[in-house]
Amino acid sequence: MAEGSPEHLDVLIVGAGLSGIGAAWHLQERCPSRSYAILEAREDLGGTWDLFRYPGIRSDSDMHTLGYRFKPWTAEKSITDGPSILSYVRETARENGIEERIRYRHRVVAAEWSSERALWTVEVEREDGERLRLTCEFLWSCSGYYRYDEGFTPKFEGEERFAGPVVHPQHWPEDLDYAGKRVVVIGSGATAVTLVPAMAKDAAHVTMLQRSPTYVASLPAEDGIAKVLRRRLPERAAYAAVRWKNVLIQTLFYQLSRRRPELVKRLIRKGVQRSLPPGFDVDKHFKPRYNPWDQRMCLVPDGDLFRALSDGSASVVTDTIESFTEGGVRLASGEQLDADVIVTATGLNLLFLGGMELRVDGAPVDVPSTMAYKGLMLSGVPNMAFTVGYTNASWTLKADLTSEYVCRLLNHMSAHGYRRCVPEIDPSVSEQPLLDFNSGYVLRSLDEFPKQGSKEPWKLRQNYLFDIGTIRRGRLDDGALRFANGATPAGARDAADEKLAV
Image (cartoon, rainbow, N blue to C red; front, top):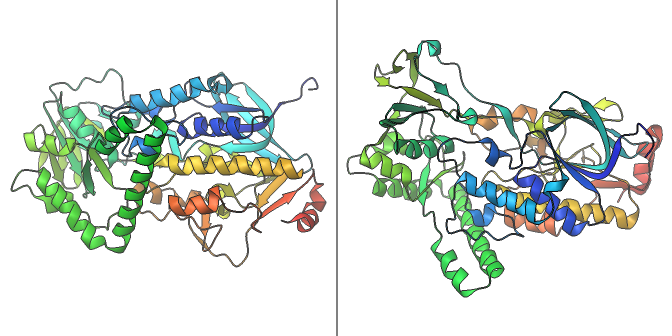
């Protein structure tokens, strides 16, 4: 490498969370001759599972599907806590020599593709403020879509009057003492239903204050079938069997929810009613205005939320906030909720590609004007992939498929001498929102995301079984993905694409 030249790698992975570590494993396993590094903006790996430190932090997906396909989950609890998941990710990185490929405190701020060189030049900002550049042949974003530096908190009237701490779960203070205190948790999503029973163990009382209800279902924290199969089958066979069992159950339940929503509503309501004391107003507090899976459903392991509501250590109030007061929250109904601590579990902000700016041959990429190819590449952007999981199933199911596809693509390019691949939109494909999901955190940021298309391979199915056929086993030369076998002068690249289109 010439003096002063940027360091070059075959592949740059952005993000050392669940997706990034999985991507690195696949890359090592399937493309062993490719050099790579992982750039991580934070000081440790784990992504979401290292960032969130609030009480009770856990997955709302089972670990047989949230875990990697290649690494069996062997712990007793299927729905488990954040530290256990983080330990699993760290173990994967350590066992496979991935840790040494991670460069911490390296935040990718921009990347520019050059067709003349068939290279990405990636601009990186280190924690000390120094900027450096790297080049790579393929850029792979595994940064998810959550914004890590801030969560979503609406403006509350009179917030400055409240005498106690107001805490967002994304920035949980290590020294927050809530033992023996009255806590109000504002929210009704996955974070709120996790926090309430966890905090209720030590607080004087915890109130979950929600503007509107969410669908909440209870599942056993331990998978009984998994325990039986682990005693009778080899570890990997048992893991695969339970993984497929859970995939099929999740898929069938989701499809039933979309096709027979009234039936699913009744089933969920009966489950909630059985878990709460007689006379509890289930319809007021646990009957949403939308259909199941219009928003993500909340799972509570072993009914812990319902137990806290039943034993009186927690309560739920469905109302809107008029203002904060010195001693708590005043509601639109006139009721006053006394509080020593207020937790704003009001949601997350989304940030596509971690906020990285993209340019192709000097022109800025307007991400909302692009279309997602197979839910993992952007139209008009060469040699780049991104990993985004499912909204209706475990994140890692899609992450594993994406990793398999990228490695297959890289090997295909090597075998045929291609140096560039880029998805090109068929003009007959109409645009649709990327996520068919009406959760607040999605709707607030959807305009900043790419679109999906009206037909394959631009249609985002959110269906693991379907994606196995199209992503794991589908043809690479599908007519939408164009390949070129050399660096192309900027003025000639369009003509070259036509000749070399696959």
